[in-house]
Amino acid sequence: MNIEQAIHQLWAGNQTLESMLTSDSVKTGRSFSDSIPYATIERKSNQTVFRTNDGSAMDETRLKIEIWHDSYDSARTIAEQVKTTFDRSEFQLTENDRVIQIRRFNDSATQDENGVWCFGIEFIAYVYLSLGV
Image 1 (cartoon, one colour):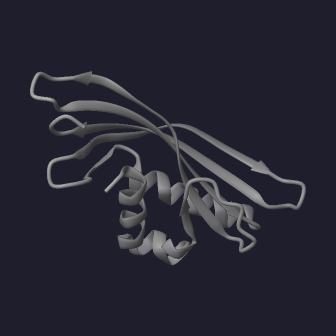
Image 2 (cartoon, rainbow, N blue to C red; image 1 turned 90 degrees about the vertical axis):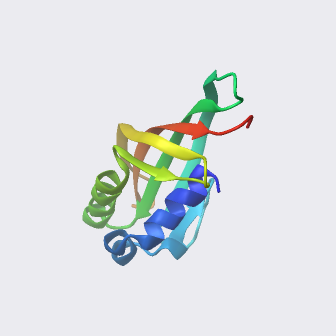
Image 3 (cartoon, helix red, strand yellow; image 1 turned 135 degrees about the horizontal axis):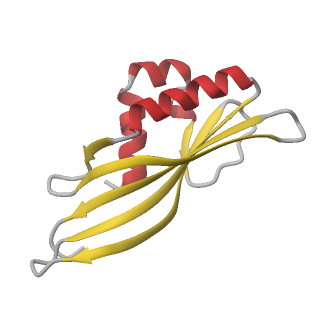
């Protein structure tokens, strides 16, 4: 499982987030949906920080979660819950691979010409990958 899939799965399992915006409305990668509200999980970059002699590695992955909504208050509430849920968390990816830390480093809020709000939360994740990935 990759980190985007894991976040999507964690979103689906979080009753608070799921009640605000169902995981069916959360897409990985860029999405231009006609159905508002929705969210996207997009990988911005990935680099190996170091490798060990046994073939394991530590990667730094930058992600951005964007919440698109026609209501400022609703988008902000969802964004705050995303921060509460994922900032400074850790979780398994596979039996041996795991996100050992994910932390928020930037937030944004913009409104497009149609009045739709986009709240973005950027994260840096440190990912332990076992055996020669």
